[in-house]
Image (cartoon, rainbow, N blue to C red; front, side):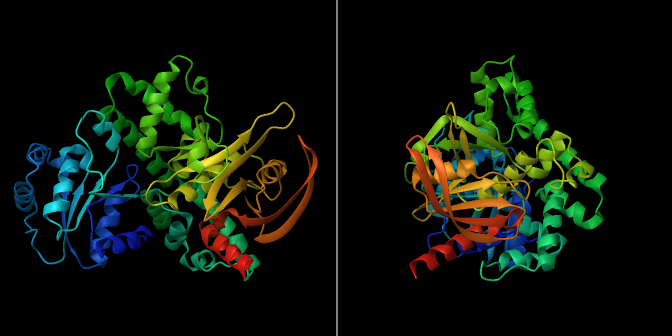
Length: 461
């Protein structure tokens, strides 16, 4: 049994006084069904689980929006009365019977006492063929991504996880812990966060077996495409799926994905894969204020893949290649580090995950910030370095232009916090960039929100 932090979210949800049916969204095989089963077991609840992919006839019954008739069928299939004390109804693979999504509204209005969880992958593929409206305001969404590095540690080497969970800038990490965490982070880069791959790694330590899991998952996705995509989209969809891991960290140019297909068709596929959480768009924003979404330019974006382990598998990066990262130069070392950080920044957002970056293209001074996030009233630029050193030129241009007091750098060095006063040439002449630089090792990305809270609290004291 592997711990998932989302269990805490489910515990809060089930205890709400005005609880709504919960739809768990996420890419296939990220562990949605296992999460619900583990939660029910730990909470000593009776789980009434229906895999809708195996009972497609239910869609005609759900279409009537008759909750009594629907529950009668569910009881007959499961053999468990829905009136059972402590019961949770779990509708898995809900994309197989789309009218179940409509029915969730009526569960909320007519059967409030029954906790209902639904889970599905590739919902957008199904909804594209249906015209009914979603029950807005009557259901709650939760996004589940791959396992995080901390969750990986809890399965692979639990004793190390406390150094992340209890981290504070006021308590220096032991040098031995720093080195061990770097090595484990490298292993995570190879295995990724797909639960089956993590489990195989923990049980056998076999690189070949983990590779087999990655291969199987990638093939499953391509099988799903043939099941849910329109026939004219299939070949291009498979091509885009295989291309995304190779262009992580780069501004998307449709011609780099395919020169044989119209850009409109490629955009259509990318939009579908993004909605299905197979990839994530990181939009350029002008960073002129909050929220960051108000300043996006939706034609300028980068892509992240769903999982770093699958990304490396599709790119052909095996363990022999990855274990030299980051001590030696790799062809896509920057993209690997950027994927790792981006994947975790997204996972920290449970409802509507989104990420942004900033780019300025000029004749003499191009600049790009890997990620820009908001934390309270602050706009925080984040630079990701794959090694122990690297230029901060773009960061300095950004903090000067936007008058930013705090910036973050992820690299391989131990944690540090320093005041920076750097003279920089701008269009207005020589200016001084005065800001605080928070440096964290890559493996501490999950500690970032707590560290930022601490820094802000200290600043107000």
